[in-house]
Amino acid sequence: MSTGIQNNRIDEHLNLLFSEILLAQQEFSQLREPDLDKLDLIPQKLKEYEEVRGRGFFFPLIASGRGHGPFSELIDGSIKYDLINSIGVNLLGHSHPLLIRASLEAATMDTNMVGNLHLYEDPINLSKAIVDSVKGSNLKHFWFSGSGSFANDNALKMIWQKSEGRTRVLALEKCFAGRSIATQDITHNADYRKGMPTSLNVDHFKIHDSQDLNEQIKKTLENLEELYAVNGKEYCCISLELVQGEGGFNTYHRDLYIEIFNWARSKKLFIWVDEIQSFGRTGQLFAFQTFGLDEYPDVVTVGKALQVCGTIFSNELNPKPGLIAGTFQGSLSSIKAGLKILKYLTMGNFLGPNGRVVKIRETFDKGLNDLASKRNDGFFHSSTGIGLMFAFQVKDGEKDFTANYIKALFKNGIICFSCGKDPYKIRFLLPLSITDAHIEEIFSILDKTATELLKG
Ligand SMILES: Cc1ncc(COP(=O)(O)O)c(C=O)c1O
Image (cartoon, rainbow, N blue to C red; front, side, top):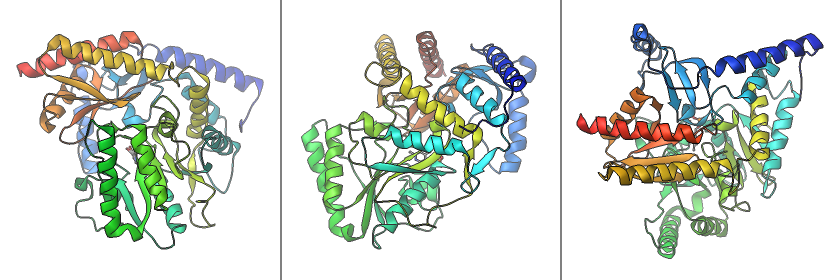
């Protein structure tokens, strides 16, 4: 690791700052109502920002920069549970010591954003650690990018360069791949590309909806064959999220994935797995590891919880010089944080069948089932997703009702979001720092808010 400027005085001050910040942030560790004299502050500021940005916001949310664990303080003085962590960024929760440390260490260095020409040791170390973390797979290289969408664009470019003119993509229905010019066509929801020309030909395949796995595999492969019969000669790859994020936290049996991937292999298609949302959340570092699919992916994309984005790819996909480049690798504080997070997840007791990810999930599933049985009014449906990706439908999963419940939860102290479409679901991306006592409080808020919403 590059350490920047270092001497005893700086070390002393850094250590002091580290513990002072840590202690001061711990003050923000429980729910709080907004200050009465600040009730208009967030709507006012958002109105100003809306004029600059050109569009409004779903929540009245501006964070103060203070928070601890699952809690985030807003500038109106309220403190809320953050159960969506900026759509997946803050996996460890707020003011985590590793993140404070990463920022302080980065502050001793001579710059902030770093790139591919003027190299530092940190991106080298993180790249090595990422490649090391996928040792059992064909993935041998890592390239940074500025966003998840761009990591996906790079994956596609690598695939295209090795596909002899075949450019059409086979993707899973309901997938979300980003909003770049290429990925907006892969993203299934056509509402996100209104008025856009088609720049990439994509066929979306269906996973057959059935409780019978054999039937599901058979019908899914039939659908793939049908699509292949029409456009097969143009396909370069199959692209999918093993746990669909935006799509509704949909996930399927390992054997189904194996059959799909074997089918893709038999047609000589590259296999591209998007782990931008799932990284760190499924019980192993990557969902393909959780499902025991290590031998299949040719390219995997990451982002969000890792604090940096990028593309991990096989020797075969290693691009020719000039194809993949860009100014930034990331900020030094993000790259340092990424390396610390990777080590923390692998060295701590988080992954595997007895790890904290699985325990948190079990507690949430039990909490939801208990609440649904206690209420016995059909308000809560059982959860979907895996690990820290937890979603559930309320009532009929109707769009406005779901949005109203999310807004009511926000008022009562829980920040979350939706996923899926017809039915819409409540989406939690749970932070690792959540405790069993927090979970108990969260379920009492879910219950209270449901009752309030039904009363109208
Ligand atoms: C699965 C998946 N792929 C790609 C993206 C795009 O990433 P970004 O928003 O960083 O461009 C997202 C973001 O939500 C995602 O969840």
